[in-house]
Length: 477
Image (cartoon, rainbow, N blue to C red; front, side, top):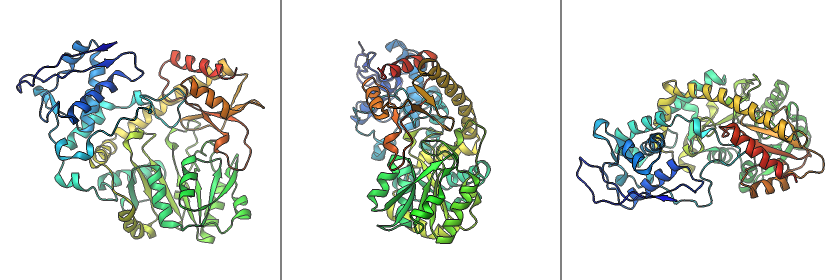
């Protein structure tokens, strides 16, 4: 079924122009996302010229017979993206800056991409609980006050106030004594890792990696022509002694100390010390990927390797994909003091910089205390959703799954009974619309059995969770 708003000619500034807007209620795509996409398309093709007033939230909601909250979420999203400008009592209109900034036109629609996170999908924070209105307001402020130079160039190191805010955050939350001059803003995990590998390694160098590990890391290492030395992990994390036996002269170790990806154990203090001693002795490097550290629910906020490093051998990587949302495309690297000049020059050679207004909005969010409050709120919410999934899995699939006690962050690891293939289960789950991860494809050399990786962040109702677990159970037949 489609709802239509009939087209009318462009009216005066006192009356908003309304174009034909069709919503498909039988589609999996959320209604507010459909509204956003229709307006983006209309603005891009010229149907909604800059400065044109758009219907009020009340008017559009009534005409489409949907809730005002749905329209409000869509409008806040479009304001945050810079398509709309809120003018107080004068209403909302199409932004006049878009025609001067082609960079912000919507990308081509990927028809294969899911409209919302699929059940059990890992790596996606709770999008339903994100403070959309606050984020839209912060973005709108910077779109109104943007400078021409912001549209032309952002600088490759990143927005200075954001770098200062990140440095302050890391000093308090992760014990890393760093300054803004050590921080480089990147567009995500891959760009961070690409920057570091380009600056630290040459083709043929050996790199210690955890086995199992994050698949994109292995792919990037291979693309850079590096020799991977996969090392096993145990209850204390990476077994450094194995690295000393297999490749003592490796140039770099890539580790996830706070939450081993994907098994979840924490690198022990003994292993951290061994790792730092090796790096200092061999003049090798450590890349510490501290993903998901904000959302570990067992009370263990482990110290970072970077905070223990006294010899400047550790590079720290962080991201806002889990604390904010993946499409933000903002991450960062903390480089040792002695490497600032080198990587400042390198960043101009391999990076293009990141969207300025998003960096400014995020800086405001952090400086104003909104970011810390959001993380605290989400930590509580995730704990509730995690426990709900644990109980539902034990109740519905307790004879088929054995939940790992080491699982941390936003992913649950469920071990399977002997003889059950995790890859086959994941394939069956995908056919039913479930995004279940498999453990075994992430393993290179060692045997950790068969297991499923299950995300819980986006289950916001018990009914939805119960239905997803029942569908997963059907995959075992």
